[in-house]
Image 1 (cartoon, rainbow over the protein chains, first blue to last red):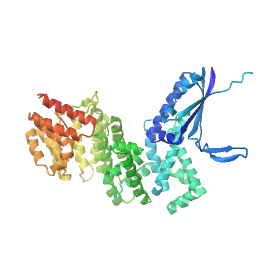
Image 2: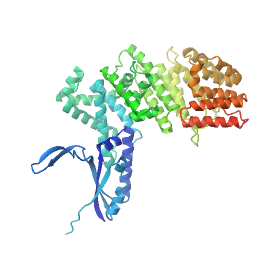
Image 3: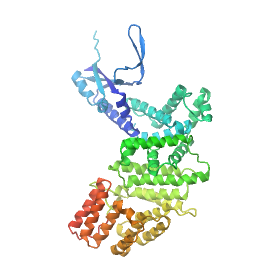
Length: 118
Length: 426
């Protein structure tokens, strides 16, 4: 078994859409909770992770130019991450395919956590 | 921890009201933004870490923090009323003012004041109800539009315009002067009544929406009963009426999802608690000399609720109550309902004569229940062709699929020339 990080991204519009009304927000929470519950029951969830503020700064270039970000040119904003355990990358991607962020047109980036066996 | 049903919706109405009271109504959109922001935070945090033990307290704390942040950031750029600006403009007093605003005692007051502000006299009734749904019940514009079968765009325009009207009033309506309160109280009661009706006869197609609207109307009427100036006999009468009708909600649709008439409903499904509460409120409404339409309507509803079987209904009482209602509220719809009661006592031929004599009868011709009632009278007289035509007309006017299905079933019975005269319509 290996660990994989899931990075949740969606556009600001999709984010607002999920929050479009109090009732919708409530349904959205329910879906996420159900998804995490499923992963917990299957022993797949290593760390539920943290949500991220949707604004921040980006420092780039050799001069260290600071811009308001996250990324002005990218539409998708990282909203949070979790760490799961899976047999392989295919299996991890299969688990990610149930993520509620997808319903709003968002995406999940699945990346293996590098193993450092000494 | 499980999320209580409609938690966000209910909290939305409460928080927006409290913050609007604090910021002044010209800053209504600021209050809405702060609440929206607090909800976004809840959404992001709760979905990962679960719902906290006391979600309401969590939302209140977050809303307070967001309010403080916003005031720090743009406090000087915003227009507040002078006395508010002084308090919110200084770091010394800001946090205390925000804390005070969220004291439990202020909650009902804020919601009541918001409700009274929503029934601004220059706004049409339907807009007042839409505003209440949006601001106090936490329905989004799209959800409000769906409840009224309007397009989202049209509803958006209407709500934005109405909010501008409210913003011009500068302050939330004050419940201080008894005379001022009395004038608007009637409009508030009408709005709650319409909100409930919208749910009960709803234009909206899904049963879920309907029950939500009825529950919201009930929640709001109990807010009125919490304040000395709004706890009037007519408010108790309206509470009685809504409870009696709410009791019948579980029986309105049968197992197949079809609408059932008052005559055919399984009355064992009626909610006993709502009926008992209806009677209690009806008694409380008897204080004072004023007899309002709500009093009479709730007395009629109480008669229906008291009959264990449709055949046990005391139609004599109901007909004489309609006589009283005709004196208070002489509308064609009331006259039609009176005729339906008369049909039960003196037969369908007499009822048809009564309908012939209704003042302003032409106004009923856009009302599906009018043709349905006429169809029913003809049906009972054995005039199947007439009855079928009338049910067809009613069906064209019906507002949702379950009404249409109900009326098509009626037409079908006429065509079968079915001899079963015991089933009726209301």
